[in-house]
View (cartoon, rainbow, N blue to C red):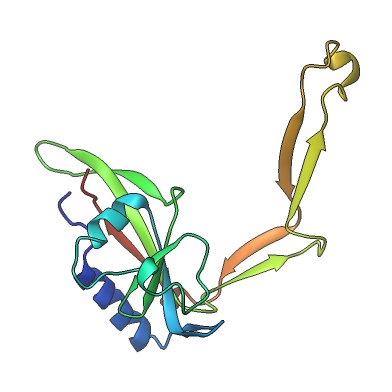
Length: 170
């Protein structure tokens, strides 16, 4: 419950990826790097460290990822509010529970994505107001939805993906 995401944990993850010979992402005028997906709580904990390099300090010189917030020790951090958080229960006399956050750090080619259908990953469906006929007699409803057609992702090398599980400051 008190194990927060720290700079030291990032350094350990980078060491592990290097020892596992994980390939780094490169291109777009960027030096080789790993990527870490974090949620806002993990970001809060990391940004308190003086070694943190905020994206605003380097964004003029490089292409950045959508959601990129900074980097540290050759790791580019991308923030999302959709990060995995699970409920964890300590098996102690008090049986305390807390949110367990998952920050995923990985190298290039650690996973693969396949568009099986070949017609695009996401199909967007728009139904204008009044298109439902008698199901919408007052022409009041319109809908927008999407579906994934023949899309899958697969871990190609599990040694190149690290799930750092940690608590977070409230």
